[in-house]
Length: 154
Ligand SMILES: [Zn+2]
Image 1 (cartoon, rainbow, N blue to C red):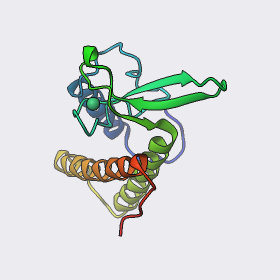
Image 2 (cartoon, protein in one colour; image 1 turned 90 degrees about the vertical axis):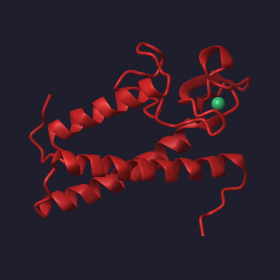
Image 3 (cartoon, rainbow, N blue to C red; image 1 turned 135 degrees about the vertical axis):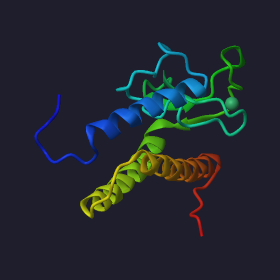
């Protein structure tokens, strides 16, 4: 349903983004119907984050600790499902970091579109390249944080 508030991105751009994410999930080895592939889900980075050891797309995974606390992670699937099983990162940390990057990115685009920015196909390709860079940078930071004391980039 379309709202009446001022759009941040056009519906056309939004559907292209959705399509792009679905394409990346499939490219990352996530089959349609596999947990975490719905466009709206708790693990919105499933198939977007990559394992730094085998490059397989990480998938959302929840488990309950002995204490009863439920933990949400992105994990590399076991070898029988195409991964190496060697990577797990905390989902809330990853989601927050990427959400922050995304909203900063969208704010910038909103600002640019108000200045008469044209969302042409070429522009969208350029935006995707920049988004790739942003995501790569973020996931590198996340990996660094998940491997030890969180070092700030200098
Ligand atoms: Zn892996």
